[in-house]
Image 1 (tube, rainbow, N blue to C red):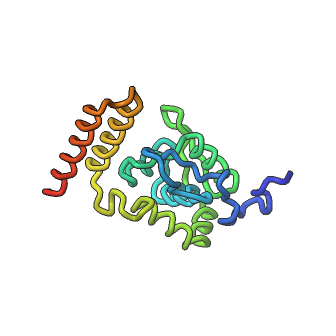
Image 2: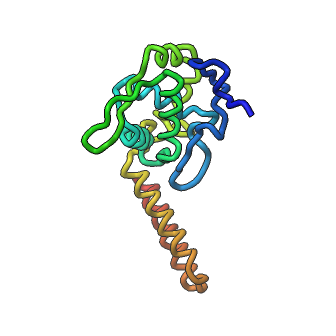
Length: 186
């Protein structure tokens, strides 16, 4: 079977990036994908175009821009970086003291980003605003997102243990009702 990226040694099309090739998603709290159809590649190229980086830095940048709600897995990021390097869009640089290889964008990578500007812009809009456009930069401060995730985790953990008695269920509901009432007053 011919590999889908071998149509031209140094050209990739947006359509080359199917789900199996780089959507990569580790979303805390579940939910949809942030970068479907290989959009993560465009984001990585863009971020490296801003500043040469290694994989861990890129993972952290994406996570920070999304207020901690999404972190691409190393198992997705590193193969994506390798593929982009093989295609001539990135150039690997010598490893740092920690053994991490850094990447810089090539002229071919910059041209590829420009050729796919509308896709790149759509992926950056997701990166800067989350799936629903109202992420950390859309009015949801990181400390609020952290608190929401903590509450969801605490609820899941308690509900995964033994079944609630009627008294415990009433107390559980009362805590949530009280929190909702307090939030309405802010």
